[in-house]
Length: 120
Image: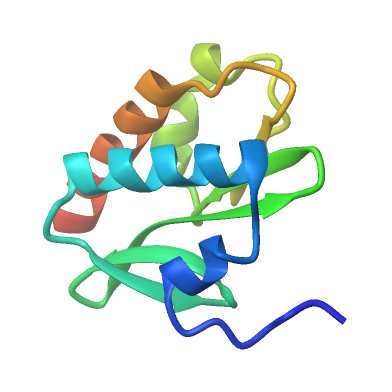
């Protein structure tokens, strides 16, 4: 059975290797770059970042893809509609396939947008 009692993002990352781990580390670094004040936590047993009591963004790994998630606002989904075209997107998750380049610039923009929403 998969481990489900992670206490830190480092502990979560240590359960992975290879491409998934490398990409999660890149996402984590991008989030810290955009929102250095965000606190790293585990929520729903996945890595999450929050500012104060509000969650900024979550991410996690699955076989074949990573997911960047949050309860996305309609404004965010509209703003990034063209950038997200061709990706699997729901009201709470953006699927990032491991067989395609990681869109780090887009991830940074999404985190910056979410930061404005959280702080606003």
